[in-house]
Image (cartoon, rainbow, N blue to C red; front, top):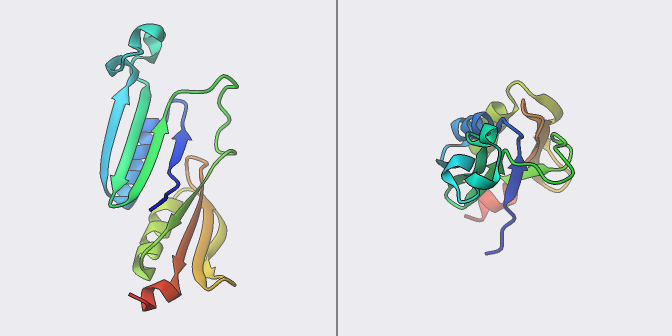
Length: 141
């Protein structure tokens, strides 16, 4: 099955953000710091505790993140949205409530014109989330 996996840059907040997401979603969380990597000698000593790579996995969900920035620098939150397709109404309600805590609601959780329960918000780390639950899919299981 083909999937899209999001990779998010946090420029220093990676550990805190990924621990928050693990608390909200669950799953296994791993971190690799710059100091633990093969590129440690190529980076400034001040970067040794920066997260080079992190992944949060739960079932088929995979979220990856880093503290590293590209050549154009860091632009917080305006270049990514995470779409989370939920498997039940209870799950979407739980994820929506936890992930939106401390953030800004853009679209309250409600029935959409395409037949799904949908909501959109920016979390407390300025990352946009779009949560979707296809009600018809639950009836087919």
